[in-house]
Length: 276
Image (cartoon, rainbow, N blue to C red; front, side):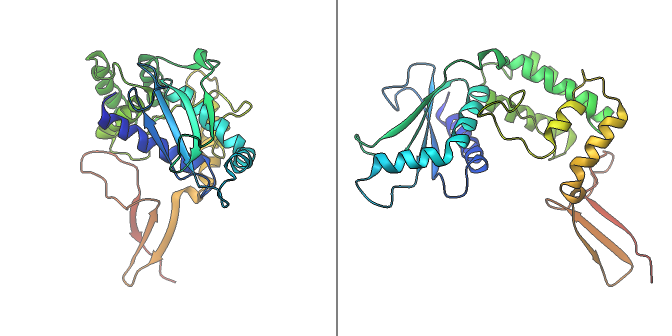
């Protein structure tokens, strides 16, 4: 992996850390390759996560053990996510910021138990496009995007990419066609086993309802979408009555107008206001 690609994946890793650990629990993570550390073998990577230094100097071992006890679930969740999305990261370390040669570390190697759940790059893209075609709100646009990504797949543009780089690139290519920032490809395990990744509220329902191989009918999918919408007030965060005769409603993100000639998610709406 090139240095620029390492840095890009490192940014994604730090985003995952911020989502899985409580605020202030970790400082940042670094992605290391061969040559960065003698323990890294050719073709492998290592993620080193830095945590805040202990309050009392000279108490590193005890402080690290206490930190591990407090964050064990998040550590196991992050290790699982790495194994699924970045299998090359065979080694995961937690240590204090600015460690010395004798600074204690917590090491979590990939033990290979998730190998059967790891999909090939082609399988990831194929599965993502099947979900897109089965569930995207604009079927014609979904087909257009899927065909464009399939052409890139056959041209080899997704070859030799790790799982994180692959899903980010496919997401970018889908959004080029759909112009929809809510559309993204993400990997995750089949279910939250011991130490498994946390699910967002409602995702267990959505996983079944949006699976094209699931016999659930349109009504089940509709109810699942409605439940997801209630969790965030259906994306509506503000409604204002303006001085004239219009009402503006906005949802999360920057309000955008639809592109002429292309359907897009309605995040900008204006309609006549009803007078009292």
